[in-house]
Structure formats: C-alpha cells, structure tokens
Amino acid sequence: MVTDVAEADFQREVVDRSHQVPVVVDFWAPWCGPCRALTPALEKAAAAREGEVLLAKVNTDENQQISQAFGIQGIPAVKAFRNGEVVDEFTGAVPPAQVERFFDGLVPTQAERLVAAGGEADLRSALELEPANTDAAVRLARLLVARGDGQDAAELLDGRPGFAAEGLAARLRLESDPALAPAFASLDAGETEAALDALIGALAEAGDGERKEDLRRATVAVLDALGVEHPLARESRRKLAAALY
Image (cartoon, rainbow, N blue to C red; front, side, top):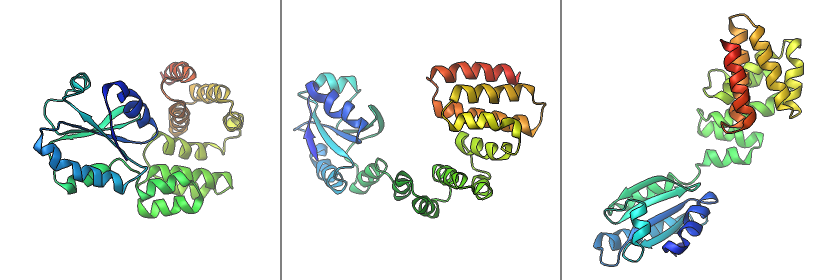
C-alpha cells in the first residue's frame, strides 16, 4: 500500500499508524532523478509485504516543515517508523537488493512468527530455526514448568542470557526451598507486590552465595516484566538496592 502524506496528516498516517504496522516514508520531490529511480524498488518491496509494511511518500517541496523536522538534507531520504519512532533509514537511490534488505528488517522472521503463535510445537520449531532465540526458549520453558517438566525447562534455560531466562532458571532452583513457596504462590496469583516484598525480604536475610544471587535474579526478572516506569518497580528497586547492600 502506497499513500501520499502531507504535513496535516503525517502524525495520523505515519507516527500513529506505525504503532500497528511499520511505515516506510519516502521523502522525495518531482524534480529529483534519483527519487524516480528509487520509487519502483520501494513500491515493489512494499507490495511484496502487503499488510506488513506501509509505504508513505512525502513531497519535500510541498511539505518543507516536516522535512526540516526530520533533518532531510538530501533526497531521496527513506525513514522507517515503528511504534512512533524512526528505527532505520538510508539516503540516496540504493540498489533494489539493499531496499529488500531494508524492508526485511522491518517484518517478523519466520521464527518470530512462530513465537507469536505461542504453541509448544511453534516454539520448538522457532528454536530449530533460531537456536539462540531466548524469547522462544523462555516461553517454551514456561509451558514446560506449567505441566510439571521443571527439569526439562531448566536444561532449556541453561546458559541463556537475559533477565527473563535467568530469572526463571533461578526460580526453578529456588522452588525446592519451602520458605519461598508463599512468594512464588503470590507471584502466580498476580499478587506482585506481595511476591516482591517476600523475595526481597528473603534476599536481605540470605548470606552471600548462590542462593542470594538466585533471589536477586528472580526479583530482577519480575521488575523487568513490570517495566522501568511502573511505580511498584521503582519502589521495589529501591528496596532491592538496600537489601543488596
């Protein structure tokens, strides 16, 4: 889909819409020869990914304010928007193969599509395609834990980086401690504040060693899932820092 966009509708058609689907913006002008050379490659790439990437064209002669706002100094200038922000860009009439790679970077890979589907078979297939895909491994591990296959989940998570993977692996090691059962029960019940208070309280009483580090990992994973702006996360980080030191 190709849309001509002006300053009046740029916010709606590009910035707002990019929260649903990536939008590639082609800043061009009728007198620009390289712009005319690039257009077929852009339109072909957009058509090949119909519904997954939108192409918007902005005439820089007619929309000088928006062009200045995005620092357009030479055309053609191409910017990709996702979630309201520019995530990739290039300038000049690049070869069609480079245009294709640019668009490829905006759409989900086959493994990412399988992860989004979320079934066990999907997640296993995603890991076959991308063995290092930590998101797939964490989601599959959670399914395994839910059906009681904690050992398989632990093996799947072993050595995986990231707060979610390290936190879940730490929880699996800590679940043998009956004193932490109320904390994990609260977490599973959605009582996040109570769970965090219990985990941080246990951490404050733990001596130095692997148990304390696992408590830290489990706590950080919960905080990461909440997000940095969540009020509970901010307060709990303060408590965590005090417990650690």
